[in-house]
Image: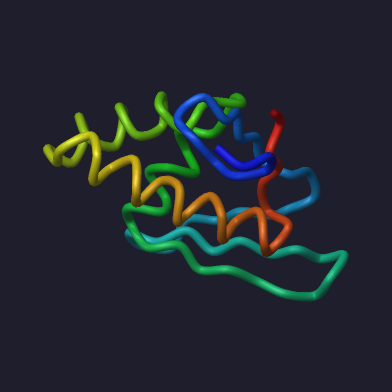
Length: 96
């Protein structure tokens, strides 16, 4: 694994400062400091809720696989893609 690359043991945490509201089956996240927002679909919302406390990619993937009834390798790929985007947008932090 390349330094900074997300893997199963990478710990991910929510970034501070975001305002989050549920609208139907989606979460809407506002970053008032940067005046931008993100909209998460149901699956993204499930992962975000699971990130209430810092968690590893493997823990997040296991929870997603169980909740959605999908294979863990698919869940891991989805989690890595999702949290990578959250990190890029400043909504999550890589803690390794």
